[in-house]
Every structure is written in structure tokens, then in C-alpha cells.
Image 1 (cartoon, rainbow, N blue to C red):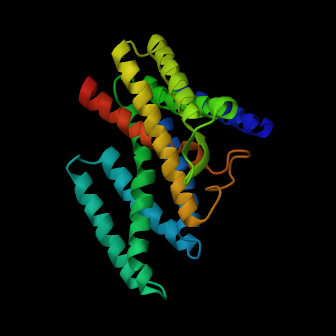
Image 2 (image 1 turned 120 degrees about the vertical axis):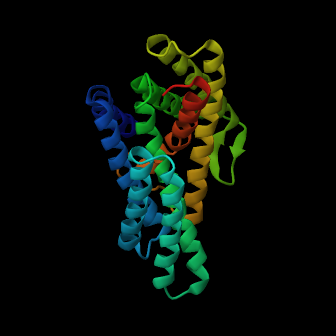
Length: 267
């Protein structure tokens, strides 16, 4: 527990000032660095026998999609996505490995890694909106409060298993604790920096986004079990890999961006 808390404290001491004072460039830089680490972790899990080559291909696919989505014309995003898929088919066809039966699985793993970790682009996209810094903090607060509330509520009150096949330690009581703390945290963000949010917005977004983070956590747990690993990596003492820490962010950020851009009409 002490190691876990110290690692989290050190991470926050570095991350938060960078986000606050570094502007848009800092958020984009953090997203790229985090993506590179996560892509490596994914490559080690999904392509344990060919990690360096798989990592290189994933980085190329991610870079093409990420760069187009953030800096290119909107109409090119789907085109580049299609080209990435086409190129991946060609790549796997030219080096299928000894077992042809696994070729389709390889294509799926490459595209899963690219699109899943590519969801990180939602953070710099949020930063570009009106009140962008506050929206980024809303994502982090919901994700962190959801994880923290879920951990402690599950530890002290957890009785009813949520999904033991995928995550034996998660409980419905933990989910409720996470939802309550995430919603309370979003109320604080609203009071400090996001008056554009109404009370109804918070009452809807808090639970919905927190639950989406739970699904993100379960999704990563499912993949780890499918790949036969306990943690995605070991970069964070007491926490495992970076993917283990931001799996909820990968689901919360794009949903909040969609809400802000489409429902609230921010641009």
C-alpha cells in the first residue's frame, strides 16, 4: 500500500504541474509519451514472440491515425484509418509467421492496439476546446476518483462480486463507491472551473463516465487474461504498467469529448 501511494504521489507531483503550466503542447506531449509506453506494453502482451517488430508497426499505425485526427482535415480521418487497415493486411500477409491460422488474429491485434490506445488523442482534443484545461482535469478526476473510491469501498465493504471471471476482486459495492466519489469530484471541478456544467450534467456524467471507466478496466483485465499476463508492465511500482493505470481514461476521455463537442456545443 505504501509503495502504491508513494508512486501515485510522485506521478501526480510531476504530471499535474506539467498539465497546468505546459499548455496544449504539454498535453499533446504527455499523450504521445504515454501512447508510446502503452504501445510497448501492448506489444509485449499481444506479440510476445515478436515484440520489437510489432511495436514498430503499432507506432507507425498510431502515428498516422493520431497525427491525422489532431492536425489533418477531418474528412481524412476515415481515409487514413482505412489505409492503416489495408497496410496492416499487407504487412501480415508478407510476414505471416509459421502458422497461417494465426494471421487473422494478428491483424485483429494490430488494429486493436492502434485504435484502443489511439483513444488517448481525446485528451489533447479536449484541451483544444473552450475551458480545455478544466475538461482534461474532469477526465482525470473522474478516472482517479472512480478508481480510488472503487478500491477503498471494495476493500472495506465489498461483498458482491461484479465479474469474477474477468476481475475476481471487483465488487458492486466498489463500483458504487467509485461512482459516488467520481460524481462528488466532478461537482468540485464544476464549482472551481466548469460553471458551464449544470447540476443535471454532473449527475448524469459522473455515474455514466465512471461506469465507462469500470468497463475500460474490465476490458483491459479481459485482454490480460487472454494474453496470459498479470500486469501490462512494471513501470509503476505497486501499480503495474501504465495501461493498468489509464485503462479507465481511455474510455472516459472520448465519451466526455463527444459530450462536450456534440451536446454542449463547445469548439
